[in-house]
Length: 361
Image 1: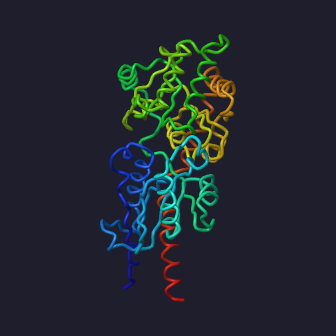
Image 2: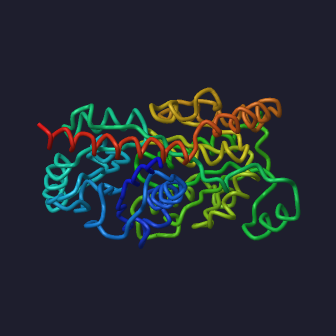
Image 3: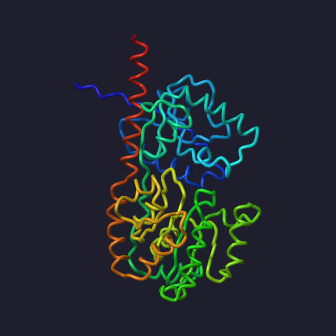
């Protein structure tokens, strides 16, 4: 009888599924990766590190201790991005944070392999964390299966009523860190509202994310002061956290999704919007070009007029909306969590092969 190949036993740290991370990108990554890996027959997910062949930490924080210094098992670490190192003046780590950064950086050198979300992040990791290029592997993320174009139905009236949504709106989903360029988006929206040539009557900007309800944050204070200064209180909405099952509806209802970031490690909401058939306007920055391909309108994130012009092309022309909607759906199909899982498993096997060759020498 032919023997079955033994399964690779993998332990994945589930800490990103707890607390605030659970509703952020790292939580979505860990959840989707676990679900996709469970469908792969060649590996077995185990609950304890002593029972495994490979340990995987799906989250790396630059300024908090998320890795153990001692790694008795071959270890894979996912580093999503190193944006705070690109804009240090906007991400103050403090003395303790800088000390922890040195510990984290040292701990990372003992990892067997690093997985990251994009070629852009790979270059950053090699540059800022002094990691050999051959140690870093790219596994693109994907929109969850729940993100899709919905059939028309009563949900449209229900969701519009629940969130007070207008007939037409620009959507943004995410955080308010410096790299996200939310003040730039608001100023671009202001350009649209004051130009009569734009079809901007009753157009609103909807900012989705739990962070928009945290009024103690300096970034949030700055954002709402800007909104007030531009007299946009009646035109900009911030509903806060929206659960995934309803976020799908918001992507489907939005006239356009805009991500004007100065920099991104990946840009998952862009894929989510595309998968739902929502036309997308994004900054012409490294990873967003890598992810969106030819299925988006690209704008200069440092030029608010250019952002406004990009949005204007979508809201004013039905043909453009239809074209971007179709191409976005097709582009999103090129990414899947199944592909992410298979690439991740390739890294696990590579790590084990390296260990075996080291033992045999």
